[in-house]
Image (tube, rainbow, N blue to C red; front, top):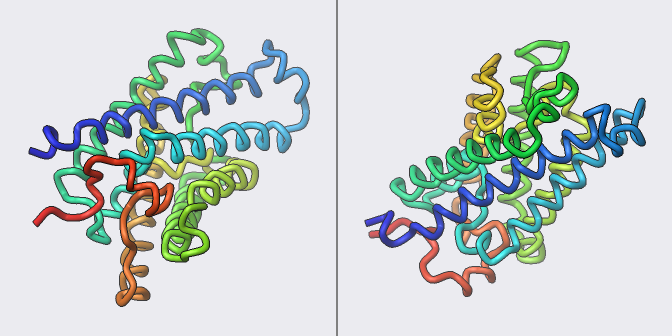
Length: 261
């Protein structure tokens, strides 16, 4: 029944993850592959290079969130975000499970598309399939960093959707936060926030080194943020789970933002 009624939402989630990983992988290759023009212009300026990647990744999120398809599904684009909304009771268990499946499929297809298009450029050691791997400080620091940034992202999302003046700006806030994270946090964990995104790169690279960090830390942090939000704002819960804002729900046919009786 969930598939029959909400399959367009699942396709939207898969397409969103595909586009996000594709754009992230493409700009990562352009910035880091020594044979590409942009990489030569940014040579020796790592922070500026991360800023360019962050800008493209952040704007990609904004475009997806406010696109008609993003508004249809809510543009979770991340299993951790879906888990958080599920914890708040804003998406049915069946829909949440299909969202997770769709997100994983989209990410896996995105990784394969990047390899097919970019070939050896995507596999170059300086690009390394846009893998998210712990920095020199090790897996423990990467786990802590992923936990903190995911908790911060979910907290910002919920507070924005909970605040009348900010609810329709949540997508812009997340895009900006993502860009900042890439500049500041990437050296510690590669900046994932997203188990599906990390899986897409790991699968195409056949490299699952410390993948557990990018699976456990974001999911745990998102769940904890949702639990704390429930306790702190018990009397004023979120109205829905559409990141573009509640007003965006008018264009959907039947968004799965509430449990079905």
